Figure 1 (spheres, rainbow, N blue to C red):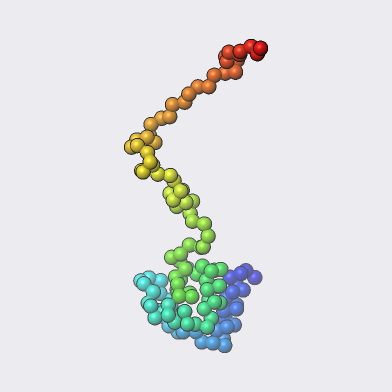
Figure 2 (tube, helix red, strand yellow; figure 1 turned 180 degrees about the vertical axis):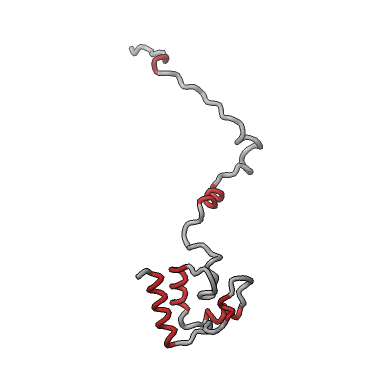
Length: 123
């Protein structure tokens, strides 16, 4: 079984013993609009919240409210997207550089070849 299937099986077993507040409540099935505050409060007080969150993290359900959140709106925890990382780490030249300094081509000073360096005789 997959991690999501194992988490869902544990959640089903737990909900047989306890009736969660989301059972038979259509507000937990909505995919649009803000999440009602009483829904998130009921989830926070639910006895199967940890199992619900474990399943939601593993499966990333495409619909409904799981563990007080809509999982379609969030990315997995971890590293940010590459384009966001580049934007955050790209150095800016606003405080220390003169305007247009980054745009100007840098002049390269040619280095002399070893054969053209005059060797001084050692005494």
